[in-house]
Length: 614
Image (tube, rainbow, N blue to C red; front, side):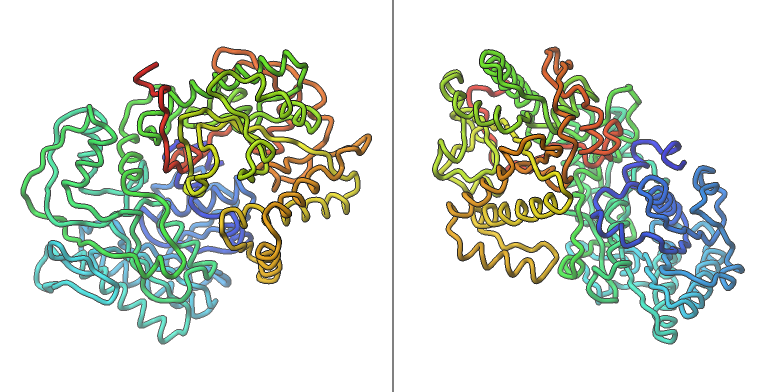
């Protein structure tokens, strides 16, 4: 399988973690023909990965020489290679992707020009025959050699001298675009063009002028970087994201769009500063004057307004590229600390929480388990998931209610139990512990200035449900409905779940029902089956895993202990079944670009627990 060959960096962009699952599901059973060079090869890996690992059964046809492909790709049942002359024999294709000369540099201009023009004509003929949607990748060089301080939109062009050999790549990109537009107009097929910034992709094989800088920073060696005009950049996963969006029609109309990453436009000086912020001891970059890259800065506002905002920022893209040159240590790779150096201190505070909870529960014979990412961390890492910033425990309803009754009396000074009963302004669907005189809030939570927003510790409840499939279906629907009433009312948000009718109905009741009444409905929905004897199913009605549905109640009958950061804590004896229910293949690490804190924190103040005062 292709997964067995890919390293962490390749797996990251092949897994396409920045693309929503529902978008990728639309590719199931489709035929995608890919033609091009380095980016085309990477896209083939990604599509084969989606078929083999995610059962999406995408038929991938590559038009060209696949001598540089991994055999695990070319030997896959989902992959077929053809030459350009054989394209006319293909009878069916849903999508055609021509990566063309995007991110490539010509070594033999006449031969490259002839190859690209032949490719366009062959692919366009197939699009006319099959009515396939076509996506073309171009890049910012198509605008010409941009001027300093100038950022180019889709209908603008910089000067381009036809007799200047330095601009032959620019001219080739323009010729390919022009020919595609002519063929699409004549053949009446769908064509979407993405003009990318400079494409970055760790271990992708793409070449950029920053490669030497990435290697030097990884090795801690001095290097130079031209501090000239601003240029635009995009990471490979955002390129794939745009392609998938175009496939599914989520880019609202055909046409030409610029494609860059979040905060993706920067000068050499800005890039040096970003690298120094991430690698202060290794980034020894000297800015110099010199000849700029033959590209320009571009704006992607048109693509964002069309519904396809990028996901990865430039800082993360640069870090991934530098990491790909670091020596292997055997440790789990992760992105740099996303909590301004506070992550280790946060994790130590969470351990203190756990020890206090464990003490109270043992004293009062209350049953609990490590839950969520904390349980996953215990099993997979014997401690915190390295980039995790919180802790979770789970209880059954009787223990959950009993803990709520005694917690505040048992907690040490400076720690507070928070629920709807202890704080009339709190409408979380689950209970929390908080540390006084600290702050830890997301964008939404920071708006709730009338409740405690100290460092949290989450306590979730798993409730009983119906034994019949119909009963569970109704229970689930009512849970989702009443939770939406509370959370959207409290956070002043409109419901938009993809169904116009359902959203309209829910928004009506959000507006009509008082918040406290909605909370009453939610609480009674969650506990509707609390007195049911011999209940066969449980669900995570108070947590985000509610969408996983229901699981065998006997999974939480027995407990054992497992190491977590050097201590022993209770976990379900059948933790393997429980974790598979929540995460699937839970021992597989998530894609590298997603290994960062699970919360987007906008307020963080550790108070006296600051790492410098440990």
